[in-house]
Amino acid sequence: MNISASYRRTILTGLFMPMTLFILGAYNGVMQTLYRAGVIHKAAVAGINYYQGLTMHGVINAIVLTTFFAVVFGHVTMSHYLKKEPPGWSYRISMVLMVIGTLIDAILMIMGKAQALYTFYAPLKNSPLFYLGTSLLIVGSWVAFFGWIKMYIDWKKEHPDGKMPIAVLGTFVNFTMWVISSIPVAYESLVLLMPWSAGWTEDINVPLTRMLFWMFGHPLVYFWLLPAYIAFYTILPKISGGKLYSGNAARLAFLLFLILSTPVGVHHQFSEPVMGQGTKLWVSILTYAVSIPSFMTAFTVGASLELAGRKRGARGLFDWMAKLPWFRSEYYLFGYFLCGLILFIFGGLSGIINASYSLNQMVHNTGWVPGHFHMTVAGPVLLVILGMSIYMYSTVSGKPVKFLTMVTLVPYVWMIGVALLSHGLMAGGLMGEPRRTNMGMSYTNPESNLFNSNWIPTATVTMFGGIVMGVAALIYFVSFFATALGKRTRQPVISLPESEELHEEKPIPLLHNMKPWIIASIILVMLTYIPSLMNVFKYSTPVSNKFNAESPVNESGNNDKYSQPVTNERAK
Ligand code: HAS
Image (cartoon, protein in one colour):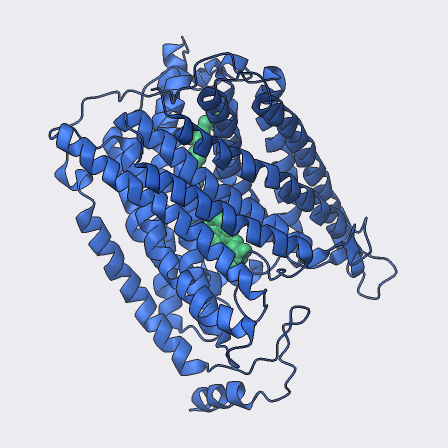
């Protein structure tokens, strides 16, 4: 489909800008592994301190890059399937808000005024502008969604009998969940954290900010994941040479995410005494339930791949795997998708371990947790972002992909790096290695009396993994920017590989109507968060404004307001 110059520029900005920042995000990731392994024994390198670097790594990679990608991939998907452009006001305002918000955050992080990590709840404190910048980024992404709704209504008028394409349903599910879940974080940022960090309010209720953050923070991980799932269901079967095994299964998986993603945030708070046991048990059950759409995806996508292998002439039980287009540069997206899926098998299984309340006590706040999430967010999520970003840049700009062989190899190198990194982190985590700790100044520094030689081998494996990932990222950056700065040789278009469904399945009305699922989602959110809020207000109260960025310890020495009600309540 041909597109207007202004829409094209918006899409290209939405790909180019976050990818440029990702250089900083990736650099700080490699640095984390060097601190961890004890290669660096300092608090800062090149003027960037440990927590500042970790904040840049998390915010850029996990919030900025992912949100821009979800919006740009949404634009391309909607336009490809509905054969329309979104209204000009929506894509322009959305991109302007997102760019301004991101620039504010980036400048603050570089200046060291925002180092409260990507999970920006109290008591760590950022500059008030950080909360504003992040809110602009999020609201900007909503505006794009509002434009797609308008686009879909217009399309539906023209095609009254047309059924919503799977990719459109996936995008709508993702952004509906995103809007629902970003309301609590907007309240946390704009009503609680911003006035507190500006000094307009004295007190802050720390557990409340944490609960509101995680109410957003877990759906956030599925907001990262669902664009990848859209690609697995609607693009991968085509480029593998097969068909989508079941469209109904794909639709059901997306709709299950809509109801189950938001109420599970409390599983990040299993160790917090303010949450009651009943709430924790309920959330543990819901967390197992939210794995079901991923198990369904493993089956449906796996069956689609088997079909593709068999169409390519495979016989026997496993031969289909060998027949798939591995390392073939004309199908370079295949490597990005499959390496992501392979990592996700282990990322998903480790998530299920986290979901068990009792096992969580062993792994929480250890290296295990970043081990888990690098096989999810640096697995399918990032690999689909990298593959699709270069693909979309090339088609939408009309510029051919440069260094195609290198582009084809990147996901395999990256996958080896992530596997090593996550193995090191998880093995270390099981031996108690903490996360978010400058181990180079303590546990892996022989000069320190905290030195623990047991953690050296695992931290070293983590570092090798980080370096391999760094090499893959470097090769990718060279190819991406060479493509972006190359010459246009073709007509710019929006075009995606489009998978057919294997069977003409009987339409199930419930899978074509989002309303009951939205209602169910709101009911489940209330069933989880009304008791959670009651827990928070029962066992905690706001404390005075005595925290600073360097230390989360309340320096007022006056903890009466906090400890008194808790002690009394618990003592009853
Ligand atoms: Fe998680 C912590 C539980 C999925 C990200 N998670 C995190 C954090 C992040 C994160 C960032 O219950 C840390 C936050 C922080 O900073 O503190 N997570 C789960 C569960 C799932 C899960 C049950 N997480 C994700 C995804 C993420 C992500 C997806 C990012 C995108 N997670 C937790 C819990 C914690 C947690 C606790 C708190 C830990 C703590 O104590 O702090 C499930 O959704 C996972 C289900 C997935 C599967 C895998 C299906 C496999 C597929 C691949 C098939 C392969 C094929 C290829 C078809 C069941 C689909 C085959 C072909 C060949 C040729 C081989």
